[in-house]
Length: 595
Image (spheres, rainbow, N blue to C red):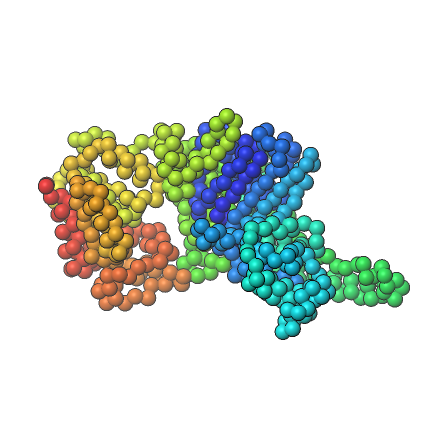
């Protein structure tokens, strides 16, 4: 499952805030604005840990609520060992406005003792006959829905319940309902299924004390153990061990209860086996030690963070290899990392962010970070930028253009292009970062201008994947270059963009490519070579298809591999086909032409 949104109510500085998450989400804000509070709220949510009464917001006397909205839901679940789905059990919330479907888990902390209760917020049949249906045992289900289950397996609670819910949904309106997960044995099954499918959350804080009992940031081995246990092949083995022990214990218990029944029947009826799944991450203990036998958690913070850095680099490489081989079917993981710039050289900071970006582009991983660093804020994906603000002691989270503009102001980010009008002559706006790499490469190769004149032409990503693209685009508007060119794809989206640009401006020269995407301009041999050993991103186009079909498109996984292998800006010019070479040379001539 994928964390799409998270809502915080009455927790510390937050009265009521909803945060949208992406694959890679970055929180920026001044000190004490509430960035760490978000990560700590997520830590409490995923680990069901206790909170103190002082954690209740000073603005409220109401309950603290932490609410997670999850998308990418499991196709099937098991209740009472019977296969079913979240939809058939009416355990999901359907958003009418967006047509999206979420599993919504709400945690409420109440009273002086901050007692925890959990519920699911779902779209549920309003028919009174199915109210609290998930709390009913099989005997009650058979009796209550006897007229509906003639053709249903009456030995299974799940089958009876699904039929009753289906009929109720047909005969009544679906309304927003809270299903309390506490108290009833049957609801524990639902709660266990939900928590088993939640992402694994790992928080790496920047201000932990240097003690032997410290958590992941002091001992990266704990993070490594958790990640190792989450691997599918190991998880299956541990599940096998758990099932074997459960079966053995249950067998012995059943025999014991049978013998007990001979002595006291009423007592034996009140007893049953309640097997609790072991927490495997706490079972295994490892240490990293130097040649001088100094434990890792006694080393400097810079060294500990350096090991963490390389843990993430290793994970990024492993996840990429799994994705390329079509084996990335592991559990979802969320890595939350406070201030990755702490105690690290700028070179290492960039390496860490590059690893994070690689990981977030693969399946099953989300990355959340906080930062005060302009260098980091410029290179993270801009659609994940979130600004954390505080006004009158109340924290809030802003996204979109408002967040981007304020982040630029707060961190003092400046454009990475020429600063003076006489240094800038032509701006070429292209689709994205890989298009920038491609056109910069061929421009340097084919432009007939001198080196100094070439530097007066810059390429920027119009769609833009990072905040620096937004900064550059806004800055270009202020500079008013002599010439503006935009290069758009040859697909329908490109045609639509061309129409919009023409309607809004007559100052921009529009060049529409003949092919749907920039990838189709890369040499067939080099694309095929880069993708040949990838199972998930297998390349099965013939050369004839590649050169003659102008609307082919590669998958995200294939594009990611081409980017990582630097195909966009290191291909051999001589491998380009004649038609492609002629078209691209013509584009360079248009860019260099003095109008």
